[in-house]
Length: 367
Image (cartoon, rainbow, N blue to C red; front, side, top):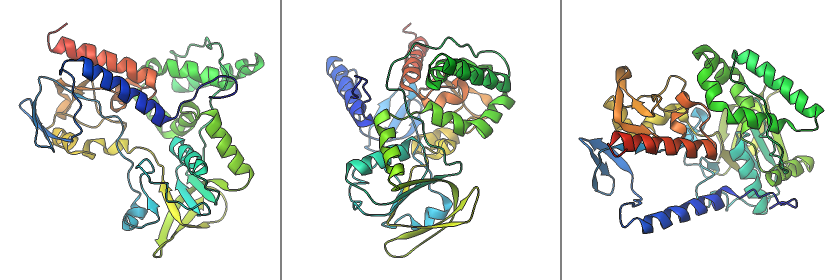
């Protein structure tokens, strides 16, 4: 809660809120809605088998799988059991044992890095942190005050033409005393129509050249987190580098990183802890868990052509081998974004979930 009354809840708090609402709905459902903490292993002839030994009968299956775990960089593979390597900072207690004066290296400079540094700071850490990524881009801060919606429309033209229009609107907004965030919010709200209106070639250009810049402006951090990063950069305890990892060595306790910057000389960074915050490995989604692997092997699902998740049709039905639609298999959430486009923020995910639920009812003949 900021001084101006703006509220930016932590992700954990929002997760607890969602869990509470789900529990309330489950209790009120009379046993129709249940939550099983088990992993699905396979599905055959409408029967889902879990690692708990259950066999669940299903007329329809919805894959609401969210994000896959991050992939381990090849250079870090020999150190997977090393005490200095933290491959998943979201694991419970992963950061709690880091000493206040410990030296830390962080691979990735996006949202997860920002949350990691803010958490470390809250836990009392004050040692040196070196965060790096290929471009060294930090997520921008959100506005701490409400603003009127920007009236821009970006549903026509090539990628280059739309980008030019967005830049012009940012200049116009500045002339009117408004921040660039209001324009990017308008772009985000039109994200699905923009993406679906682009040619395949323009989508590929966006992913290759603009995605990193879009991500740091689209997926913004709360003002209080931005304040932590700014303070640590000012006092010299946080360095943000545009560099790539080119070598990794270690002794019994520490890891030594060789970083090759975009400009300048090679850097050597010694770290008590090396934290990976590179984000989900969407390109390997079909091999990230047993059920998806089995569905892929059977030809019922396939990765999309852009490496963003799973291939789906306009009704969110999974597309499998040779382009065949699997009618009783729906995909809900970010895994379907290669078709729909903007499908990461809560409003878009919620709207898509409602559309998938509607499709499920029609498929089952209930609606």
